[in-house]
Image (tube, rainbow over all chains, first blue to last red; front, side, top):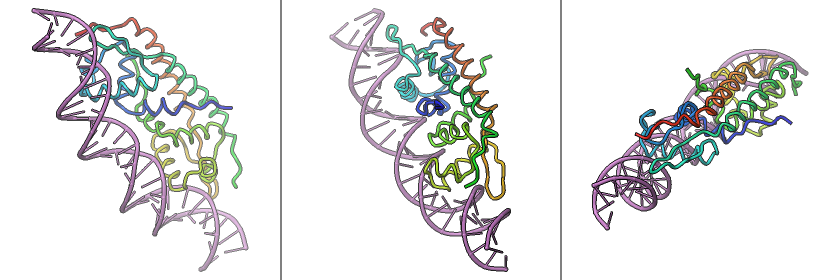
Length: 102
Length: 102
DNA sequence: CTTTCACATCATCGCCCGCTGATATCAGCG
DNA sequence: CGCTGATATCAGCGGGCGATGATGTGAAAG
């Protein structure tokens, strides 16, 4: 059975701002203030997106004083990479695997 | 420079039905009728999604008589896999890369 | 040619979701 | 404690996008 890509994770990453946040967090661990500076988004907006990313299991929070640091969970990205690699491998053999017209 | 994941492709794959279509096409090349059977979606709805997938460069069309076969472009999936792998690798080193509180 | 079937396009509706503003919470500091 | 700044939560608005129906096009079958 071909394990498909997790729809929830992809759906969450489908938002441009969230994908941007993930890309930023892949470089360094940041807190909300940094993310506000980097993205130019409002704090409220960002906090909402961080909640979505947290509930999707993509990021973890690490309180540090009155700041909240966010860091990526690399396993999630690794899983995505493997799932897409598997899909790609399957797709390469699917070209000749043409189902007959009904 | 860290090459981020292509936001357009991810955004297109963010829709559950489209991701399902891509997963199906990774197994075998199908025409619209097959996809209608497999997904249970209306033909019009499916045709709209196929247009989006086509314009995003994720699938190719191959006319065969009065049927239209769709097949995946594996390079796109391979690219995604590599980009996520790169992100994951970067994220693993980003844990200690913590920017100072402002 | 006429019919039928596969598929695409167009217009429209409805709803989800991202954005915003107001407000709550909580930690540090004087 | 009172103040300030960082962050979370909540309610409401509005735009974009996915779903649907009607219709157009083009190719095979009869």
